[in-house]
Image 1 (tube, rainbow, N blue to C red):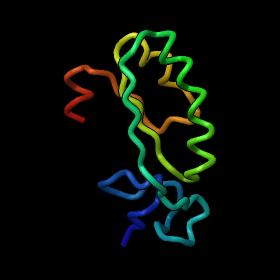
Image 2 (image 1 turned 90 degrees about the horizontal axis):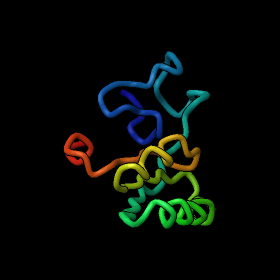
Image 3 (image 1 turned 30 degrees about the vertical axis):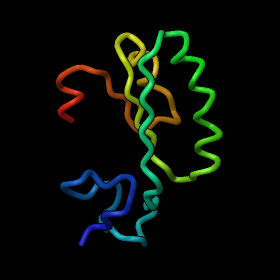
Length: 96
């Protein structure tokens, strides 16, 4: 049975990083809190708000932060290493 609490578990199948999907897997990382940040302000305000990410991760280790913002700010945040997922207000993202 796959380890459902691993951050790499895709939701439908094991991640493929190892032959075993359990706590003995070398890539196993338990899922922490799931945090949703919604910031729809101006581009500069969104960028300044990224300074909050490190203190959040220090307080809630292993958490997964999802950030919802407007275009074009979501393009700047997509590659941020502290973010698990970045969503825009597009129809496809909102359905996700």
